[in-house]
Length: 62
Image (tube, rainbow, N blue to C red; front, side):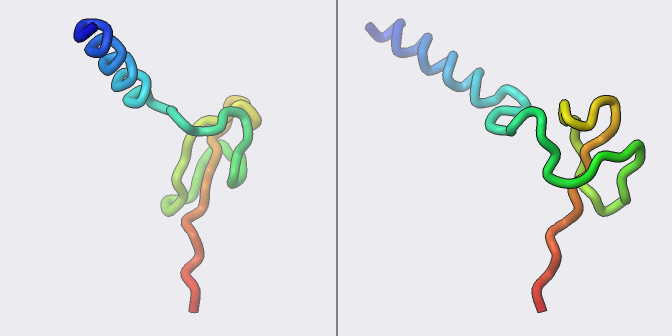
């Protein structure tokens, strides 16, 4: 029983540490471009094809 729990714990840690976990695939929350602005965060999304998905930083409230 201890071995089974240890195996499940290792698998759970592996899947949580996998890059992209919890990110939606396909849609871009910003805009698609070949070059992002220096302040933008960039990633790849299926909806952008071979371009980057550029996500602008949040606007500061006054």
